[in-house]
Image (cartoon, rainbow, N blue to C red; front, side, top):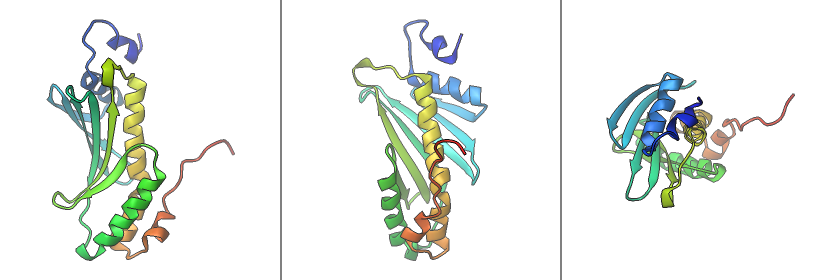
Length: 167
């Protein structure tokens, strides 16, 4: 039986249960914080990322937040915010934000499951992969702007686009 098929047996189909099984299958470190929230740590190429997925039954939305620590010099914040806007213009789903009080770079995404919609494990896997992929892709640009004193447009040039096709 596949991972997705495991969840279609029975009446209780909770999104966080599906994410928990996905995290276990990937052997990611995770903690089921509450019935409606899970926190994970995932090792990337550039650093470790903290992911939190929370289900809101009232809004019928699964919210993903992927963070990593970042404490740029205060003088570089305007350039970093410019870069964030440029990055967000390039992505189709989700968005970056910087939370200065927590000193965190944040990738946020909300999956609406209104009307009793049911997401598949493949959708959750894609959602998490997209978050990690965006963080990995733009991390070098964030570093160049924050500590390399680079112009946001120039730094964005190091963000590798996804490769399509074959060589």
